[in-house]
Amino acid sequence: MRWALVKVCLAVTTMVVVAFAIPLGLVIKEMARDRAFSGAEREAAAVAPALSITTDRDQLERVVASAGSDAGMAVHLPAGDGTKAVDLGRQRAADADIATVRRLGRASTTEVSGGSTLLQPVALSSGEIAVVEVFVPESEVTNGVATAWAVLAAVGAALVVGSVAVADRLGVRMVRPARRLVEGAHELGEGRLGARVPEDGPTELRLAAVAFNSMADQVVQLLANERELAADLSHRLRTPLTVLRLNAASLGDGPAAEQTREAVAQLEREVDTIIRTARDARPRTAAAGPGAGCDAAEVVRERMAFWSALAEDEGRKWRMAGADRPVRIPVARADLAAALDALLGNVFRHTAEGTAFAVDLHNGEDAVIVLVSDAGPGIPDPAAAMARGRGSGTTGSTGLGLDIVRRLAESTGGDVRLGSSVLGGTEVRIWIQLDGREHAPARRGHRATMRRRRRGAAVAPPSTPT
Image (cartoon, rainbow, N blue to C red; front, side):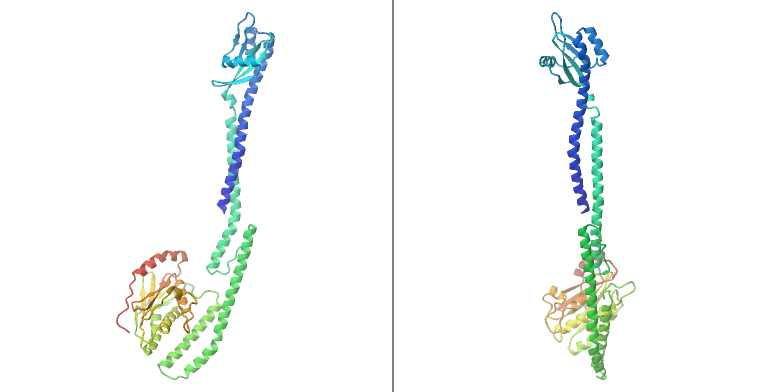
């Protein structure tokens, strides 16, 4: 907008300057010419009284000399009764031009070498017509024209520069509010809910700022209401969880009873986490700070130990690889555990009993890959499966499990991909960027590298079941 305004003002001012400067320059040139020939007419008029009195050559030479213009003036007397024609001074005009002026009795100008001449007819006492020739040099005709044109050009350039400067200042005044509006939109999009825009500038931008601030207030209010609703709904789960915990305590001893009590305890922890997160304005999947995170290998071992008991009950073969040494990632322990439970829960929920599955952990230089694969029928439409809220349509499917995994990966700058596993079913590949504090533009710079590495990454789980 700023440069467009400057260009328009530059074009308009240039056209105005050209429209006025060119005619004015031509007028100045014509005025200089008129001034030069007016002086020549005055010189010719100074000789006219002497010609009306006498035609004596000596006297006329003295008159011309007294006028101080003998070098540029000539007098042409016609031939009289018994007398020859007399020419005083240097003749520059052609004889035909002199004869024409004498015959017509009107002053005339003609071009000669080095300038122009004024031919002025003067009536003699005898009734004949004498012609006074005054030479006007070209330098006198153009005297001051170049200076005047230079002044006009300088004034025009000053007007153009001044108008561009004024347009630039006006453009800055218009662009600054628009820029603040863009910055506010970016800040709001990045999750800084306190971003607001000053309501100043031109009327249209001021109205846009008012609308933006109103929208931001509504977004904050909607998010606050959503958090409160999530907290309230989660709080309502405490009563049935308490009943479940009491019933689990009465189951006695045994692996099944212990697993039930552990599941109820974890469910209570998840509900508490949901309530705390809902009360907090910060998103749960925010990038971890320096020193934060967890040991992915430890979490994988823990969750596989939990699900292995159910796998043995259903006759499923399972295997785990890459979790024998510590692997630090910038993800909260509870978030990674929730993501693994969501994926493993999908395996048990959407595949038949006896279907094998595997969890593999790969530690790279700048990323960690978690693979959860199974030998089930696979996913017909991976894009639809990744869409939030698009469940499979079966009982208990909400479509939020893969979305939880996706948000976990994207919080570090990574992503999630669905594909075919080496077991013949579905493979969920979680790419966790190790530098979780990296800004979004820099993360986008790693996307091409990550894609290339994904294509070449060969996932090879160990062949010996655990």
